[in-house]
Image 1 (tube, rainbow, N blue to C red):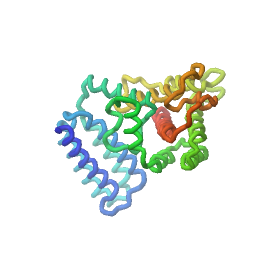
Image 2: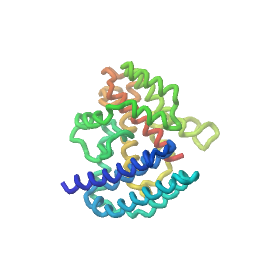
Image 3: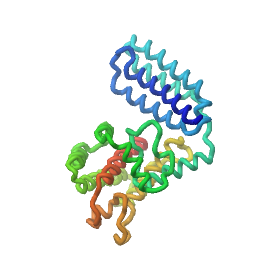
Image 4: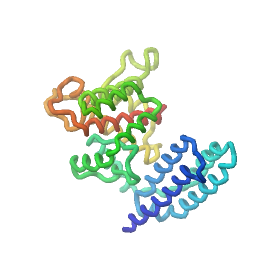
Length: 304
């Protein structure tokens, strides 16, 4: 109960700040403000993991809210307001001191994000404030039910993907059209090719520092891990959880067919591309692939 009250109180603070950013004094805020709101949401997701986070951060977050409010009220008077706002936000965030999460809680979160990935689910940019991925589902059926309940507005998810700078617009729109027409197999094939091609291109072109040919499929996933060049020990917890979930899902969807004896319950590149999938491709399969494509584009932004 204490944790739920803390989350509710914190949600109210977060909503007030978001509303300020979007509607302050009727001033038209540039579209770039969405990045700030998204960044604040990411911070918020970390803070509400445990009750002690909410309690220890209440005063700091209230001060954070007041600082943003005062800044916005004054900023609209200046033609340089947006630049000043971004600089101030960066300063405020850097000054926030976050308490440590216990090692037990970290392990629980890592295990949960890994499990969701193995069930074919990656982070949904349009999910509600409290992340679905924080708790390990008891079964794949439970995971599918909870994840699909957060995917009712596919147009919002499509909009998030379109906003990514590396999206291949023509092929993506073809996948959307196939999805809306319930041509799920062709939709899945387009999405798998979009993901695969991004992982292949990540390895560089001829003449770059790479071997004579580029890997695809499972090999491309391995190369993507290497290409990231990131030390997991140096990552923030949120970044680490993203990587755990993303690569867990990639490994599942891009694993080898193993003579195609056992039909996969999640979309699998080899079964789809080699025509060895005997069951029908479902709407759920396509939703999982849309989310994986989105997270692939996010991954590219993180390492480039």
